[in-house]
Amino acid sequence: QVQLVESGGGLVQAGGSLRLSCAASGRTFSSYAMGWFRQAPGKEREFVAAVTWSSGSTYYADSVRGRFTISRENAKNTVYLQMNSLKPEDTAVYYCADTSMRRNYDFKNGYKYWGQGTQVTVSS
Image: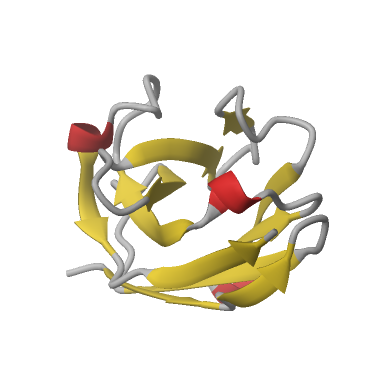
């Protein structure tokens, strides 16, 4: 069973930066990519970014492209989300998730394992 633990959330002013980490344990050969999602109060959980373990190919939501960078460190089974130029609308609980999908990384129902989430709050 894959276990995911996020860390790095917190409170930051608009324009600031944060780096989230997601440490994965129990990964199997079927684990193909990791994604970051976020959920603000009263809103649906939405896709933020994804990265494949093998090639490091990356995918982003339009709302974060150019501000956020996803990366992975295979030796540590860890995925990162560097968030720059943060805006108040980035405020949400951020979740990492594991998938065996090889496409459609914005489809949250394709992710089988999820972390517990980490809160990111951006003040104006």
